[in-house]
Length: 119
Image 1 (cartoon, rainbow, N blue to C red):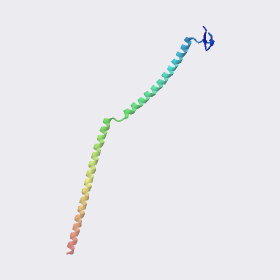
Image 2 (image 1 turned 45 degrees about the vertical axis):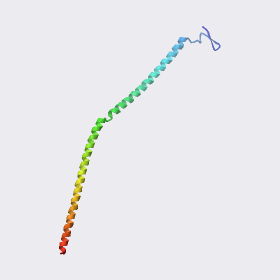
Image 3 (image 1 turned 90 degrees about the vertical axis):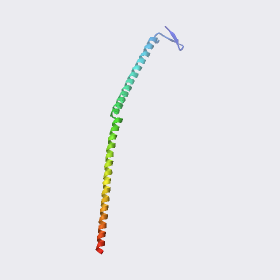
Image 4 (image 1 turned 180 degrees about the vertical axis):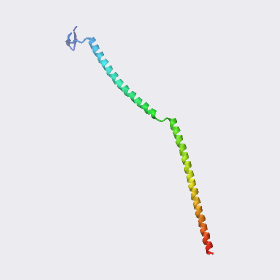
């Protein structure tokens, strides 16, 4: 079978059959699909590793209820410490007032004694 191509003659020797051309193209498409599948598998493996990392990280996060329980405990302890500090400040103020009263009484006694000594 001979045909004309670009004004020249195509002979049986350099003529590629339609079947060979389709087989060559299908082979190239199959190779491209294999390469794409391999690339997709690598990508999916990477995505799965990333998801596993996120899942592992999320499992280590504290939950809202756990945090609220811990914060309630800390706030209760802080209230106790504030109450203790207020009591200590009150005792310190009472002690200072007692010392001031003692010095005032001592000053009055000394003043009375010195007045009595003058008479």
